[in-house]
Every structure is written in structure tokens, then in C-alpha cells.
Image (cartoon, rainbow, N blue to C red; front, side, top):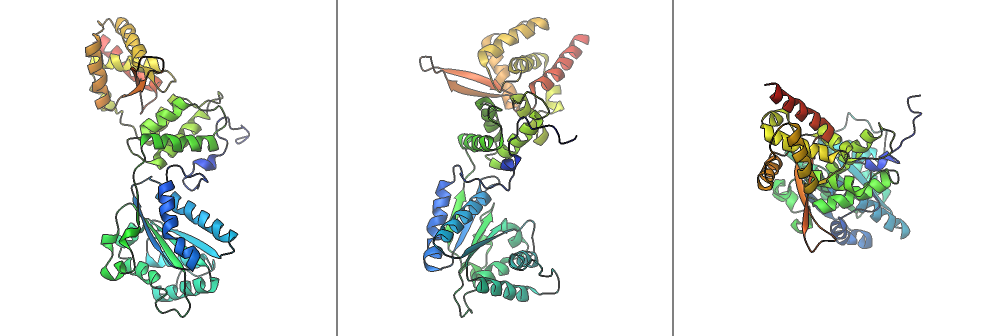
Length: 392
């Protein structure tokens, strides 16, 4: 009974997980090409290589490394070249022994987690790589956490596998970090790495985030269950962070909220509710700090929005005049009204965006939105606040 109800929004929720590696990696073509250039010698000449992927949270470092290794493995398979890759997250495996254990268990799932020293585990791992006779790539994600705990020697030892080996080993490493890590390596380790192999990942722009969530929405959600207005709102909310993980998480939570209704449509109120779940800057103290007229302006915006992502400033100002009449206030002139709106935006309570008027003579129209709280919820809070003023 509990799981009998069919989904009305979500077609494939796995496409919204952080583990999912899309076939089409949006806006990371440059980094993929840089990796391909670095690792060409690994494919063609059985060489070894290192790369450092550096950038903030949610900038696509991990998914790019995974996608690159998948494509490299596919290419090698077509050319009958044996190739393998292993991914280790250094937050989950934060010690040298823990990382080595995961590397060894890629080959021997029954390898015991106790009773072996680090040098013994290194030798065991090296033996497996030699025996496999494959071009092997190790991805060490969040490597900065290991280096902070003094794990420099492990990285160095793995990079020097060929030094005392009678047989050439093709063992490459992709190191992923939020921080620049080369300055954390000692001189011996630095000798094994090339400073030119740093690939940087800048935070995503608002338009890039829109493209990413559009791609995920098409993969994960049912046809006609969402529209551009909703995706624009998610992109605008996520723009502050430049974080694709945040944007995808917001899309996921919004869709799950929408599942609680039977309409089969994801709307802007779902997005605002999801944002409030993740992190809201619309605090009660901010609402308490609003004077009567600013509260009226904000209430008018809420009522204008309804389930929409954005409302034109023209409609919002007309609604403002109606709300003023409801609360026996004289509507302020346009200039003063916009001072109120700008003040609300500075406080993080609303957001304004300008868009070109398609049919007009090159003009622009301003649109207003709420990002952090459902319009209906905020309207009720403001109505209670204004009713309190009337009782005073």
C-alpha cells in the first residue's frame, strides 16, 4: 500500500543523485580536453601521468574525472588496450591504511582490514597492478584531507612505483581538491609531479547552472511536469553559490515536494519550499524588522506571485495599490515604492531580474521573485504581522 502510488513527477530519481555520471557532461568540455591531452601518452605509450583538478564545491571536478575515466576505458576497450580505474574518496578513507585497503580490495575483496603495515600494503597493491598488466588510473578525491593528516608519503610512494620495478607499470593519478595542493607537497613529492598539470574548475555561471539542471530535469522528470520558469528560478537561487550540486539537490527536493500533490506539475512554490528546507535567509527576525509599509510591499509581491516563479514589476505594483487600500494605507509613488523593493532585495527577501521586452522597442521589463520561502507561507506571516499592527 505504501508504495502503490505511481510517481506523477519523477521518472528516474537516480539521475538526480550525486553519484550519477551523465553521458553528456555540460560545460566541462575544456577540462575533458585538457585531461585527454595529458593522458594521451598513457594510452599510446603505456606511460604514467598525474593531473590535479582544483576548484570549489560543486564545480564538477569529481564527475569530470569519472566521466573522463569512463570514456578512456571505452576507448581503450575498442582498441583492445587493457585499462582500469579506481576511485577513492579521502573523506571516507582518510588514512593511508584506509586508502590502501580500498585500492587492494579493488582486486581482492577479501583482503583483511588488520594485520598489515603500510609498506606491506603498498607492496601488495603494487603486485596486483603488475599482475593485472593494465593501464591503471587512481582517482583520489578530496586529497587535501589526506595531506592535512600527513599523507604526503603515500602519494609519493605510489608515484614512484616504477623506480624499482623490473617491469614497466602504467599507474597514473588524478588528484582532486577544493584547494591548491602543490604547495602542501614536500620537495621529494614535487619532483614526481608537474605544476603544469593543474586543471582548474571555476564556479558555474547562472546560465551554465540553468543548462545543467535543464539536462537533469529532462533525464529525471516526466515530460510536461516542469517548465522553463521553474528552471530559471532554480538557476537564479543557485547562482549565489555557483554550485551544481546545490542546484541538482534543489531540483530533487522540489520534485519530491511536488510528488505530494496529484497535479503532476512542479511549480515555483515547490522550489521555494525546497530552498527553505536547505537553507533560508528569510528569518523571523528579518520579518520582525520590517516596518508596516515594507511589509505591505512584500505582501503584495507574495500575492502577485502565487505559484509563479516571477511576476512583472507592473503587476506587483498594481497589487501593491490594492493591498494598501485593504490596510487603509496611501500607496507611495513609484520612486518610493522601488526604494522599498530595493531595500527588500538588499535584505535577501526578494530578487529582481531584468529581461528584454521581445515585442518592445529595445526596452526591458523588471521581474520580481521570492527565492527562499513559499509565497503563500510568507503571505500568511505578513498578514498576521499587519493584523497585529491593526490591533495596536
